[in-house]
Every structure is written in structure tokens, then in C-alpha cells.
Image 1 (spheres, rainbow, N blue to C red):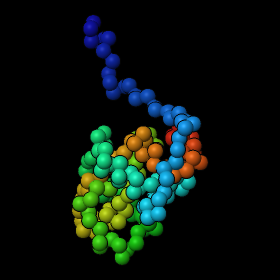
Image 2 (image 1 turned 60 degrees about the vertical axis):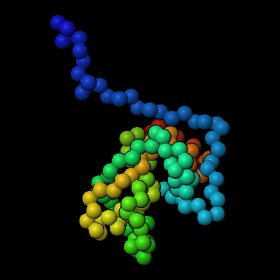
Image 3 (image 1 turned 90 degrees about the vertical axis):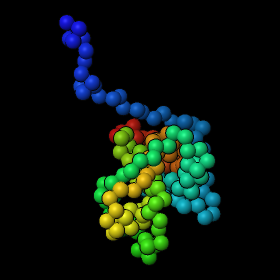
Image 4 (image 1 turned 60 degrees about the horizontal axis):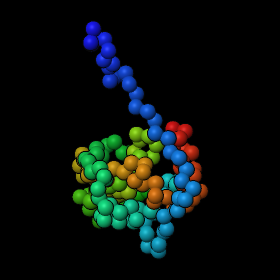
Length: 151
């Protein structure tokens, strides 16, 4: 009879995490020379993300990712820059919607790895709480919260 009380963990779906608007949100400043990653209305300050990873790496997931899992995005590739990239430098993935990660830094490294036949690259994998502070405008922040909660 005891076995009847145990529920299969396969039938339990994790609860979706909803984001609440922080009315005190301050956009991440973009200083001259900072690398920014625009993704539609969302713009992330890559320079400041990398600074945070270097100074406070606790809680940042580092893992190997398969190069073929990320599509070629030739519109973002400066072909003359590909050869000078260092594929040993980790790329950055951001949880752009619940459970879905997008490449926000490292398109050139992915392209170089692809052309060299390299199967995996190291990635910093940032969850939503880790990357949302690096949005560069309040408008983008509010739109992001709405986007996240709809997905």
C-alpha cells in the first residue's frame, strides 16, 4: 500500500517562474567602448556582464555547449574578425525565456569553431536573475518582464 502514496516525479511539471517588476530597476549604463548586444528591443551590456563574471563568478554556471546547437547568424558575423577570435574564451548564454538560452556573446567564436570542426565550446550560462540587471534601458526591462511572463 505504501507504493500507492508515492507519486511519479515524471508527472510533476516544475512551476513556471514569473518575474515581478522592480520599480527601482536602474538600467545598466553603457560607457564609451562598452560592447553591447542588441536583441530586438532588448540590449545587454556585454562588457559589464564580463566584468561581473570576472569579479563575482559565484553562481555562474560554466558548461560545454554543442556548437551545432546554435544556428549560423551571418548577419552578426564580421568575417574578417573570425580568424582573430580565441575559441578558448567562453561564450555567454542568457536565459531569454524560461528554460531557453540564447547566445548573446560569442557569435564569432561559434563560427570559427564551426569552421574548424570543433564540436563544443565552454559557455557561461546566465539565468534570468543574473543577466537582467545588464539591460540598458527601463523600456527594455519592462518589455522583457512582459515577454518572459508570456512565455
